[in-house]
Length: 258
Image 1 (cartoon, rainbow, N blue to C red):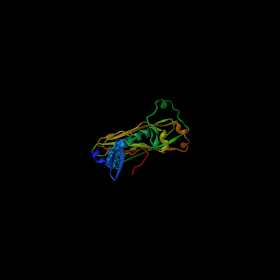
Image 2: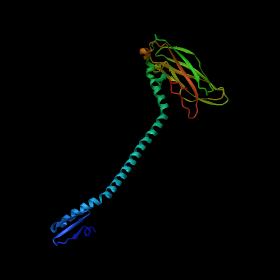
Image 3: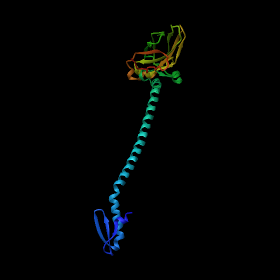
Image 4: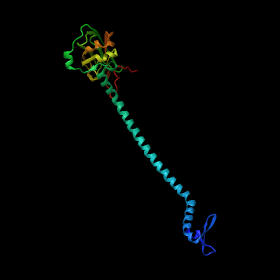
């Protein structure tokens, strides 16, 4: 369709005129074909680029949009996964922290469990006498009566000791309780080892039932070798009972809640 518009015979038989918009060139007949091809390319290059460029830009823009959507979906997936992970950690934080405190004595928590061989072979430090006092508390919503059977006892590091608490349910309905504990001063908690106790276990008392709860413990002989314990002469073991309710979270050992 372009050839009739671009090429027309001239008045001279041996020459051809090439018409282009805005200009007319006269060329020798032998070079007409090659020149026609070049001039056609020039014409198309001047008339078609605008549409081609627009189409190219449109394709590029759509490609960028698709890439951005893919990246946004990936980022949202990572954010959602991180959120789920944080929720899971928040639910596991309290029991994990309690286990860590029991194992390390952090926050005034007595170390749970004991090495049987160590208990059988440890040597008491007779010249270091320590007074252990006992404290009992109940949460405001807890209706039990809870108190220690003794206010204090005297022990030496490396020697086992037994103490008792007493709990009573004065109401006409059964109540399930659960307790937390800590040791003051807090730094002494890592040396206070409980062989047997009633902490972190649900205790059910029927109406008007009363029970004694034993605490079997010892103070590690290494207590006497720690310079931080040089001036410690009194250790207080404190228990707090809460009514066990679904969804209720126990306070972390060694920390108070308003």
